Amino acid sequence: MTHDTRSEQDLHSRLIGLLNQVVDVVIIGAGINGAGLFRDLCEQGVTCLIVDKSDFGSGTSAASSRLIHGGLKYLETGELRLVAQSTLERNLLLKNAPHNVSPLLTVIPIFSWVKGIRAALGTLFGMKSLARSRGALLIKVGLFLYDFYGSRERVMPKHHILSRKEALKEFPGLTRDIVAAGSYYDAQVKYPERLVWELIRDGLDANPRSAALNYTHISHLEKDRLHLKADDGQCYEISTRLVINAAGPWIDTVNAELGASTRYIGGTKGSHILLDLPELVAMLKGRMIYFETDNGRICLVYEYNGFALVGTTDQKAANPDTVVCEAWEIDYFLEQLRVLLPDMAISRDQIVFAYSGIRPLPASDTATPGLISRDHSSPRLEANDARLFPIISLVGGKWTTFRGFAEEITDTVLATFGKQRSLSTRDLPIGGGRNFPRDKIAREQWLAHAEQATGISKPRLDELLVRYGTKALAIASHKGPFTDHDRLPNASGYSLAELDWIIDNEAVSTMADLVLRRTIMAFEQAMSKADLDRIGELFATIRGWTADEMQDQVKKLTDELVQKHMRIV
Image 1 (tube, one colour):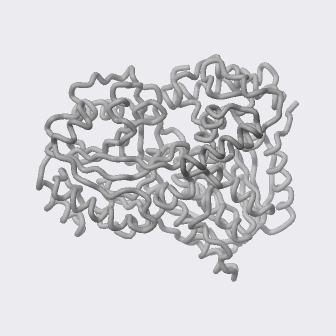
Image 2 (image 1 turned 90 degrees about the vertical axis):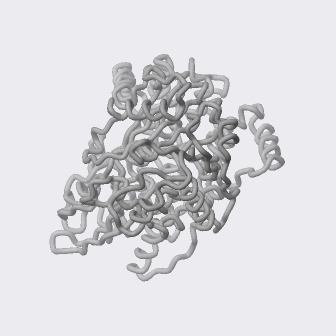
Image 3 (image 1 turned 180 degrees about the horizontal axis):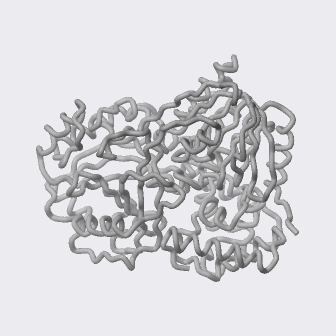
């Protein structure tokens, strides 16, 4: 017997309401671009259905470097419009999602004074190669331009250059081969998968006629009707005026399912690892080192959830369903770190987590993946006799620019429907960023109010506030079979009451949805097999799973953590 949760009941009733009408827009793919577009369209009163063959935010959007950045390296390839848009969107996200996006002080080790100028000018004017080395003068010019383009809605300090002595004092483990270092601010997103869900939830709240479906794929097409099939066997027929293909690296596959042959995507693979290396985390002090490798590529390392996150590779790859972090990538990361930090002991057995994904970049014949544009486009396929609706495909783009991309597509859709924009998302808070206390006094007031309302201590409420933003009050107020004192055996920072609320309210279908996406529990070293078993029991209580069903779910999640993420549980 399965007990429907509040979120399941809500989404199912919404879907039933769409079955006997023509839906304005069906969005296929619920990653960051699809979710951002869904929210914007819903805010304009457009009726939307967003569908994903897996969970919301489970594909490429969960495999990023977890950065919100302006694209400093895009200056080198002359993508100045992209830098301008990216820096603006970064600044807006710091304002609109302060619970999830925060400033990240970034340092660039510099190994020469004047190298790289000729190569950089060549790349800027169309030569198909990347600069092999970037000297202090080139980095100074780049950071000056970066500050210039990032001046709109500025919320962070400008760059400065550190002397060799200053850099080695700040980062005593750095190679002594440096001559200086550049210092500037970008931003990080701690819970990117949650941000995707929050955008979808905001869209659902904005338009009660819209709906969202995860674990549902296209079965077949019939004129203006999409036949959808959910993993639980349920089938649905949806009529629509327009399909937007936001499937990322699966875009060409989805278009083929809709009877259209395209070659829009030429993705590249990016992998990351997390190291349990306290010495490195202590040296970083919350900062990121953005460093050049011996082949001219860029790597990065910064503290994430108590670990050192290292990335990323950039290799042409095609199949997003089977992508994993490979041995050669791990060797590459460790080798580059040892060059950067020669006195630090770094080894494979320090890896606690790994992940990999395919960037949905535009198809390109270049042999240098780093030269493929990170900008976005939206080619349109017109309706025909076999398919009575047009398709707009969201090609390329980057995490940081999702709102701007969504704004462009929403304006196009509104013009197509003869409507005008009624609300801008430029200053619209996201999820738990709404009414978020931004300074010490406001935070203390929020905590005092929440303590009085819930009876939960301020330190615990602050922990929930960091994790969920102002949604923390609803979680702390949740009345169910568990209390805040009921905790997981090892990952004891999580209460059963907290997880019960998430399962009940956030469209959680599987244990992986909870552990990998609505929380970042899987990234935490404390999590154990006992925790997975207890979470399985929690699901069994809520969903009515049998003992065999529970064990099957635990095994599936364990296999995924071990095989895809190198996670020992």
